[in-house]
Image 1 (cartoon, one colour):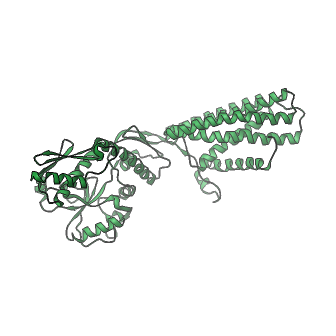
Image 2: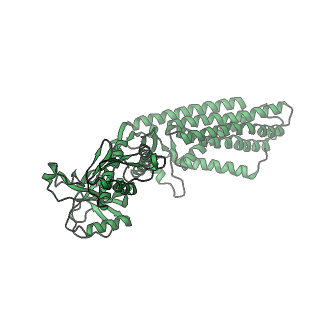
Image 3: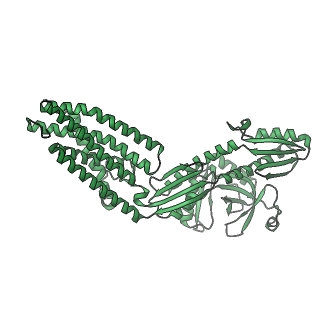
Length: 533
């Protein structure tokens, strides 16, 4: 164990250099850090919400709106299916959470049921009858379509998971580092965005559904007639934000949806110089958009965002290039925010803000100061204790302890981990555990020396026999940290990550570094007795 092999010496030197190089950027001002040579590391620790301030939001996925949308789509799908099958019907509407339709000829009711089952009743594992939509014939030509509760529960769960991924993409586009986005309960999402100083902008960006559709304008009736309640079947009256009219009558069936977009960027119109959003479709969207515009030249189509018409231009010619632009009353920032939303994708359901709080930068600075003070006090107390208890060997342990801290901070900077206030607590705990390993080694060496062994033999047996206990204790700690990291969230994950890194570095520094230092000292001094006996 006390053999000073070359790999041990190299490992100690490289670890010390690594710790210094990757910890140093955290201590330098930003301008000095930017002026460092290209080969020097410049990564710094990401501070969590509790240390640098930011925004905290508790969001709830509106599953009721999700069901309403499904029912609206089901009404339109039923209308399309029956028309294609040339089955006359009437009284197609949503009633008490289900869709009801009356077949004019009761003799065709069974045919209509079979057509609907083949077209709209998709397979849903676990749902009654294996279908997500149940279809029943009540007699007299009345058919009812209802959504399976199991299918809706599964869809709500998928909506939450999809919302988390979309929120992550949106926040990443804002430039926020290491956001925390986790599920809470069945339909809630916790969002923590460290460093985001404008919580209202964050709320606007992540809370907007951003469902984009391209729909034809229905000009079969006037706006006055539509406003009076004479809206044609298959159309709807939507509010307009194009600056020309307050309402626009559009057909419900979307020509193209935002899911077919591949890119969206904020730009400026070449003629007017106004901010616009340029977009590009995928191949399917480009084909459908080109076909729709080719057969509707001279007619208006509406660009609808979250149920509001933001533009309703006239189709002058077929748009076959697969790209275009959205104009409106945009500022450069609002156009950029819309582009971010479109790139990230639409939320499957609206999000309701249940709770919003902001942690100020001043409070975060106070937390950092308190953490540094507590770390310094804890570190100094541990170093004083170990030196008083073991003298020269305590100095070696203190050196290993300093390298341990540098390694932890260096690894966290290298991996761009997030340091939270509980993470600082994990760092302090790591120091105590590291010293505990040295105490085990030194006490074992002392026992071996009292048993009459020579200094070199006492050192050999002390390290080899204490190593078993050290590994046992640290493997247990590592397993606990992994469990907390896997199933915890936010501050708990920060604590677990710091603790996990500390477990690995503590074993290395407490065993290998002190062993190398003691080995070098032994070679030079050749003592007759050990200084801790």
